[in-house]
Length: 205
Picture 1: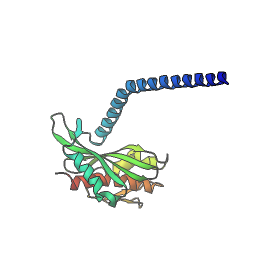
Picture 2: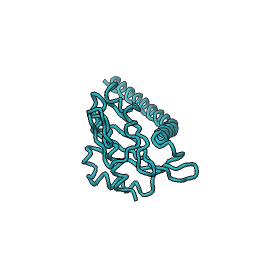
Picture 3: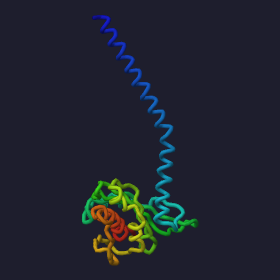
Picture 4: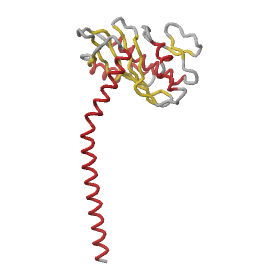
């Protein structure tokens, strides 16, 4: 009985030691990889920003926008576009430091696959210069077509205060043609863009 108890304690100590060593190793690996991962994420984000606002050389958080974003998301004003929100607003500047436009990071939780997050570029005149999908988990061949230029290019030059989705195939000035077989995703992405437009028209000084 004593030998059995001694063996149990020995096994427990070995397991504890293995767990401790594994934890230390995982922590060490995390610290080594954390920096490179953060840098890769920043580089990917900047690539998307340049894609949607190509006239800008650098991007920084728009002064005063963080408090306004928090206030807007809490106000319920965006609920007219479904379960959407604004994550951040960036000012895009050229090589001389002049503001040439803005990038709005927005999202909708109403897509077919759940969350879809976008970056929306807008020039100094308020016209959309690009829409980039940062995250989406929709169906390949259907909802994932929201990433294709054939769909996102529809937003270029739009300056309306709100956009709607049409299934007619003949979108008007304030309309976006739905992706065939993916109306839910089309509406979610369009409403995420509407969140950016709403901020532009109601929260910018």
